[in-house]
Image (spheres, helix red, strand yellow):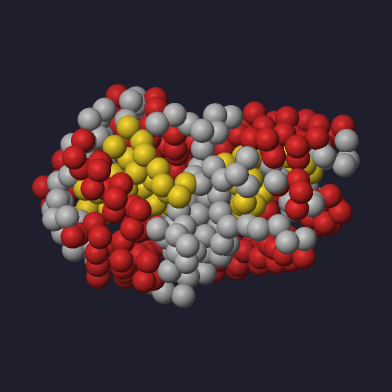
Length: 390
């Protein structure tokens, strides 16, 4: 399918940044990076110190990167809750992890099914590789993840395509901020397993914002207990987790009880990495290594403080939306809130006329609370009206 919101989010963000330097009334709610209330890029002090502690020379690594650092990162994420067989490869950011996955295991005969609204770049990556893409609206009438419609999509896809990949972005979904409940994940695992097609039906979870969610259950233990005969791909981003956006730090992890399939995928991903970008940069990963080995407790404290900053902004913005009776998609955690509208492109232009820069998505307008200062949010209190979204 074609991208219904065929706009470049980076160009929108650049336009907003440029105009903001000329006009203090401009509100920039486009940037998926954290900025402080002085509108300065938010960097973890522990990360800065780790950078300063590193050597100044960076020799070649291997196509799979420095895997021992991937082990450290995985231990930080999973806390030892997942003991199933796995393979990992270090990548050029979270985007690079997804791209490498598609390039390695999917072809033009396959299909990726994803819920909308979604991260705009998903369309671009799949279109570039000639992989078919299908979508469904994320929420049912009970405002839960719509597994019934997903099942219909899988049934249809299996009739027309060789392999089917179900793409999820959880927790802290981009663009809504939704985090799936434990029961929703268990039902999703059961749905995938009900087909008994371990070599045709796969699950992908883009976990770029996992560090900014406070789940009330152990997600990795859930995978360990419920994945069973299925194969799952997990992608991670070091950009958000460690404020290393420009260092392009990512990781692709494949989890499966099918050991031969794991080996095959590992071989393919290394081959594609070597024959495209050759190997990942060692710089960002060495920062992570130093951080996790020498400054872990201080880093976790900084991360908690950053999550508290996001939460305080979200609390105020949600209060504004609710006071003005402006409907938005369910939010739990993360960088973004999405206001509902059936005319996202039209509303996007209308908001620009009011000096409010946002990102249009399917059925909504994404506000990046990560980059909104308290001053910006107070301006939104004055400017936002329900009729702007109709």
